[in-house]
Length: 277
Figure 1 (tube, rainbow, N blue to C red):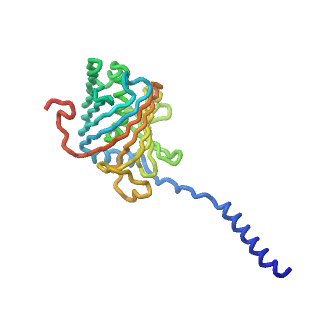
Figure 2: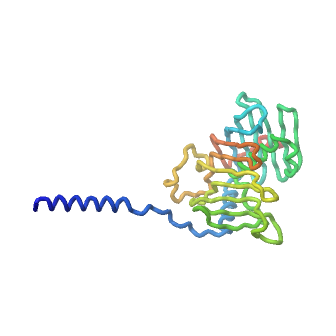
């Protein structure tokens, strides 16, 4: 009987240790750092200012009938501050599908396969049909990469913490200020790294125009992505998403863009932007 005591004690100790291990509380993420709307707004403006020009190559998958011929395309983007942007799309066979040029409040959309060209103010872009809608959605998505979706000086913002993220609501300029009764025109979601991982665009009545997810963040001009745990204290102003997923709020389709390369702050020629040299 005496020889059984050590074995019984060890068994009981092991069972108690195992039971305690099963009930170890799960690791909880630390609370978010306190950030004001002004600080997040300034961060967006710093990211915009860090990129004077950008050019890159991408591939895209399109669903919903935006494109009459191809559901896959290859493309190129050119950007020069403050607001010159060009998007070109080609079919897998190399045929030019569209050429979209934007400068200030003006745009020009050329559709070689249809032999049509649309031009005017951006507010009139809807007249271009599905391809014009596709171009507008593409501009919103790419704007999150080059930084042209930053907050305008006369826009108003509010920030709240929601689901472990910062939610920044952007309101159109008005003398009434931001209020719960007035819908925002945009909504940006920042993660703990202070990177914008989602962006929602809204119509004048508060309806969702588009929802954009940003992923695979890398420093510009880098080939490989950097794991979150290895980012350390790197300057996140130059981190950009190399993968973008967009859902059309009108239910017309979706867009997935994957950048193969992006180069920033290099010389951009006028002809690259579709402008006269």
